[in-house]
Image 1 (cartoon, helix red, strand yellow):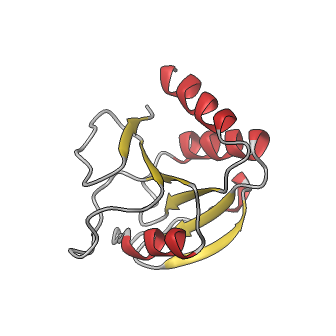
Image 2: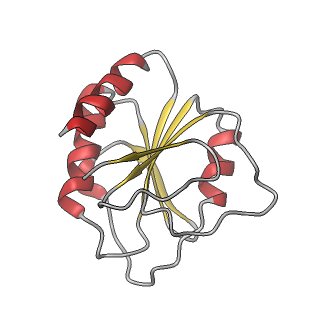
Image 3: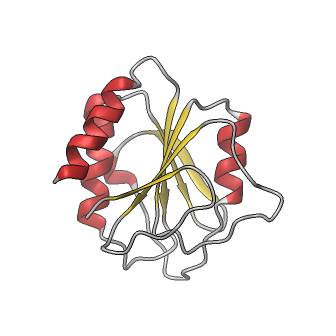
Length: 136
């Protein structure tokens, strides 16, 4: 549970920042208990966190709440819209729970905010920007 302490510390260090948490909802094979535990951590420590549910499009934007996540079965995911939304909303730090198998726009080479990819599972893929953290 090393990742748990890392994320706990990261949330605590960003209490005065605008924080968003994106959950990739493109598959119902996601480790939902693990994802709900991460969302609950944000819900308890930083209740003003914005929760974005997205796959190939943004499905919903709301205050962080762990029992509101709806998963889909199509498996298609694009990170571009959620990352563009975060830039438009001037988010300071974005946490993105995903397996990082989705699509990135070729024009997007970096982002102007802090980005952490929270990757459930044993494999930690390379990310084009931001920092990947294994949460398994």
